[in-house]
Length: 290
Image (cartoon, rainbow, N blue to C red; front, top):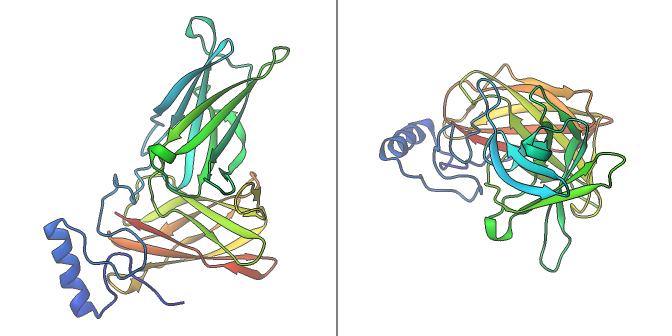
């Protein structure tokens, strides 16, 4: 497969190194070569450099709503971006007291004008964390601005009371290049990746999800039995990095965990060779800058 730089033209190291240094010193993006990726280093807090928690979870509120007699707050542990997002729901009752005896379900979708509404598949069901908030990983396949953003419906079941819901709309999702659809034919696949901590020149733990769709993303099913090979490559310097750990299945269908080794800071494109039953499904690429 032809390697394409998302930040700098692929040239000899004699040319690439000065270009890289110049772009870093000037603080401006270098020229693209049509690869479609980000244009210039953005750092670990930029749109393509996942921040990741380096300590206890720190939640950011995405909004509050009322669902019948219950209060609902939707939270995320980092700004929403393409790839796997960790969402949480806090449910409160009278006087703002936390409500524990409630089942939570999340449904995330984005309306498509004149087409098929697309969903963001979740992994498993929301489960209470140590802080009592119901947490779930959701794979956002595409970016969107507030004007045509994503919506998330929170369904709450607390028998014998009737089920109630709250909907959050206009949720912006930035492009992080951590979600890639791939495959040919009636069945296509979605790979989404999440860095579990801030990205560094080291071994970086990741969580990945794999889903399949036969209706253009209107619904997804988890793929629990895939195997992966991962190949990090640094386009601006023309080399790879050794030591990565291929993602392997967890107890949650469609969820995999592994690690990506980056030998130095900069731009990295990681090819995921995805197989199922020994057959190659595709080779999607995720991109990071740090």
